[in-house]
Length: 263
Image (cartoon, rainbow, N blue to C red; front, side, top):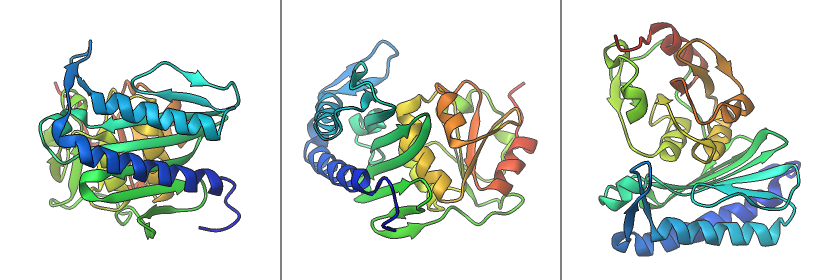
C-alpha cells in the first residue's frame, strides 16, 4: 500500500479489528441464538456482541468519529467522519448453516466512502480498499471481471431476493445467483467471481465498505432506470429504492439497457 494513503493508519487498524471479529465469529457461529426482528429478518447474540466490540474499539481509537451500524443507534463523536458497521451480513445464512456471511466496516468522510474492509470468515478471506489505492484480498491486488459490452451465458450474475421480485430474470443474460449476503456479493464482484450484482432495499451499512472495494476494483454503479451513480451517490441513495447494479462499465450499460421490470 503506497505510503501516501491518507487513510493508511485507519486501514491497518480496521483490518486487524475485522480479523479479530472474524476469528470470534468462526468460534461461535455454530451455536448462535437467533431472534426475529420486526422486519422478520434474523439477529443473533453474535451480531450484537460483534457490533459492540467493533463500536468500542473504533470509539476508543477515533473518538471524534460518528459510529453507525445495523443493530444500534448512532453514537460516538460529532466530527465529519462516520463509520458504518455490519457485524454479520447474511445472518439468515449463518443461522441456517450456509457458509456465506461477512463482517463489514466502512468509513465515510464528509459524505464520501473512503475506506472499506470486508471479512468473509467461512472463506478465510479479507478484502479491503481505500480511495485511490486499489482493491486487495489478503495482500494481493484484485480486479473486477474484464470490461466488455455484454455477458457470456456462463457469467455469474447475482440478483438479490428483493430485486428478483421486481426485475424480470428472463431479461438478464448469464447464470443467476442469489447468495444472501450483500457484502460478500460486493467483495466477489470486485474479484471477478461474480460479473455483476443487483441490489434493492440495502441500507448504508450493507453498502459502505463494498462500495469502496468495488469502485477501486473497476466497477461502476447504476440503476435500472438508467442513472449512473458515484460511490457517494450510491451511499446517499440508501436504503436502495430502485434496483441498482454494480458491474464493470460495459456490463453495467448492458444491464441498464436490457433488463426489464416484471410485467
